[in-house]
Amino acid sequence: MSATENKHLMETIFAELSKGNDQPFLEAMAEDMQWTWMGSGQWAKTFQGKRSVVNDLWGAVKTTLLPPYKATATRVMADGDYVVVEASGDNRTPDGKIYNNRYCWVCRIEAGKLRAINEYMDTELVTNTFQQ
Image 1 (cartoon, rainbow, N blue to C red):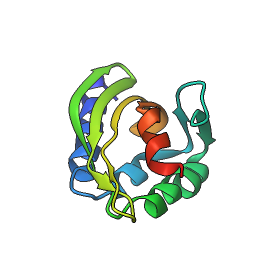
Image 2 (image 1 turned 90 degrees about the vertical axis):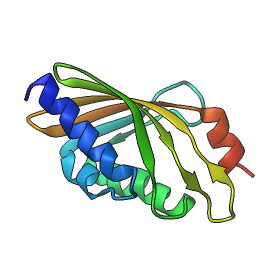
Image 3 (image 1 turned 120 degrees about the horizontal axis):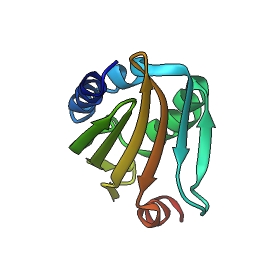
């Protein structure tokens, strides 16, 4: 796929995520998907394979945040197989805490499928929101 097609895929995914619909996002993931939370602290980790992404990462999102999860893209840039998305969340925890993280996802797309996401986020907000 071209950079334009890859960018369009991510714009479509985020148009739906902004409404709380994660199905196009989940359907776009390749079976060998890899999602990495970048950094060197306690939140840095990699989820290997779509099963791990869906069950471990996305499963945790669905239990630690009130559904539906929402994120809105504020900027999308593409170069070849890579699409960079700046986004902001619009979410709350079950106990009412506001969780509106800001993200930068560097996505690798091959043959119309998401193969990798390197996610940069405000880990201090994650710590303050989810650690008691």
